[in-house]
Length: 530
Image (cartoon, rainbow, N blue to C red):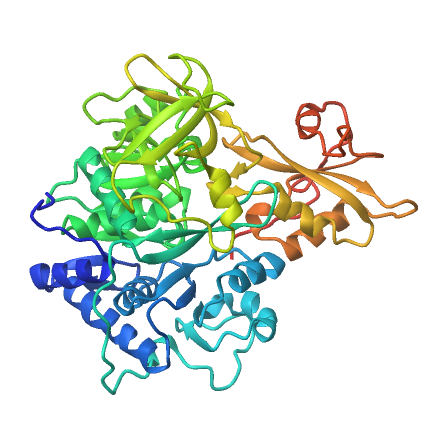
């Protein structure tokens, strides 16, 4: 269990302290390599000195376009030791959205997985990032430029003095989260926040000295960072990672690592549940699943079939990957739980006044201690002010709360679409579709998916006299959007319905029935993760 005498308030001190305590014990496990606590310390130190040697300084940003490979934590903690700020980028991004996030964050250095070079290469000249490194040994889908250095060859042979550990209030990372009516927002995350949330999660997930935490979720998200990597390090137990989720082999992979705890999103839960039943469904090593989006309909049967306890939770990048969570000794099926200790929560109406129990309202939260939530949105002070009103952070989600203080998720107040564990903004998809020469305007909405969460549907109004087929638009979208943003359905309209002030009436489109709908999958256009 966590030694409450160990007080860590920054990532650099955490890695150094745990290395001194645990030495050669396993810390992080990947498919082809296990990193001990001592190796994590020494190799992240090498990275920090290498970055310092090429001129990366305290406060500078370092971008990571990396899968779940050993290079990610080495860069993450190496940047922390330097006082630099990590900018993890979604590995599915490409084109304008990828360019926007890198230009907005302005990194001084970037580390790119060789397999993702084709996504980054077309943008590098316009971005002008000073220091570029390739990670991994496998070939990319194209040639890398001659002389581009490898990440594991950072010039750390000569000593470089590192600064003191960062303070609890200093930024540790910038995590991009989808906007509702504009481009993505970079949430500035302080060191204290990254360590507070895992402490609270761990207390409720009953981690023991024999625990092993496992995830197939990406390290560029706060979920894998806080719920798996940092929770494990704080408790001196191993964290294990797969590069991506494979439903057919998930339980076997988890057992191969000896996992006792896993993290699952609703789409993963649904797909696992729809797998053909097997005699081995309950013979794996997992006993606790931290979940987001488990429904009343599937919850009890999922637990019985797979012999696990579901601990449903709610969280956001800004206020903790987990903000509400079911206490293990008093789980309520269908609820996202009660507030963790570091946060206050309330349910309010449109005037920010509390509503009675069992009444729908917006969930608002605020921290009980300094620097335990995000510091604001990068380059967007107006968005920070908009989110923080009347001393509360507004989540944009509708919930109810019962008389015992348990919260129940209802729906999203904002227009974010939740697809396969990813939050995506209609704006991002629309901005790409609208660049097609035949498109006058598009509106994108979420529609119910048989796998849970939502699928993406695009309504398209063509320019006068223009002609384009659904297949051509789907292909265009697949070439210019991350896989999870490519619409599943498309419908052509003569005119997009508007309000008097010319805002698209999304609610009418969500409810629309009877139109001619084109299904991308029936047209044979399949998109996959890189």
